[in-house]
Image 1 (cartoon, protein in one colour):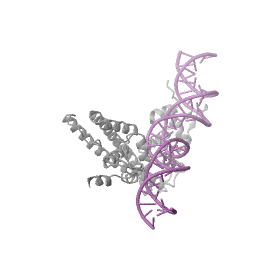
Image 2: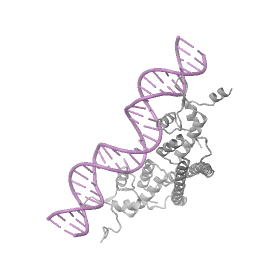
Image 3: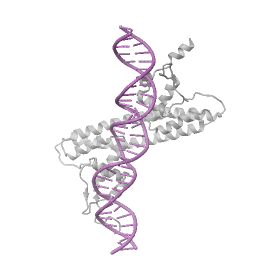
Image 4: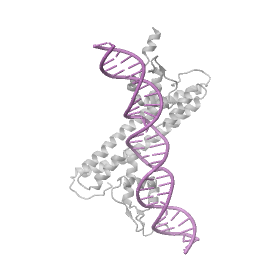
Length: 140
Length: 140
DNA sequence: CTACGATCTGGAGCGAGGTCTAGATCAACT
DNA sequence: AGTTGATCTAGACCTCGCTCCAGATCGTAG
């Protein structure tokens, strides 16, 4: 049998690492930093057992981090959730602000992309005509 | 006339900082790190004078950095350009590889965006129905 | 029982990408 | 000449986000 039998609902840190893409080091680090909503349960021997709700939260954290949210903001969000109902408007604002930043980021990346694509085209064209057509501006 | 025109077209480090968005510190740092194609000219007094071609290169650097290219790659690109013609294929590949990374990044951000937008909608809906409808999953 | 891998804690270390300081010099204005 | 602000160099320092280490413990398979 595998590691989880009675533990079908709770996962070890390694299993959570697999499911979230975070390293076990990062998971412990996140916990120390107060990025989790609640305290992680422990076995009698002191090993962490993560609930599916812990894992869902971590998966959201991963998305927010991937999209550039700083750990400090993530921590703030965790605190809001931890303090329970009554601050939903603030949570909404935090997320919505971040969404706007993501939008801006996507747009900036698309501009970069087109500048890069343009450079790529210049190079490709030069190469197609043969490299031997001599000098050209170093910045192209 | 031509000479003075050329002189007029060179910029101080502060002016370049304004035009590129990089700090003067960052400009000196980039230079030290070998990210520039050529050595920057100096006045008799030792102050840097940037040509418009320097500035163009820096503007490309800014775009590449904004889109996540590491300084090491930028340095590599600068070296290729510095060593003159003959390695255009390699430059092309470097840029094209980066363009692919940018594409992947845009796609990842769009996924994040939609996850976040979904969360935002959940919060907005709850708030629209009044905050008083009690408990809900902390991870929502 | 023994091995062996996974996990534990606290704290040090790291790589990226700058940022800042000190103390001197330069250049322009008054 | 004096004042002021920009720039110079070398090098120390900083933030962020992990990553890794040492040394101990847990827990399962053989």
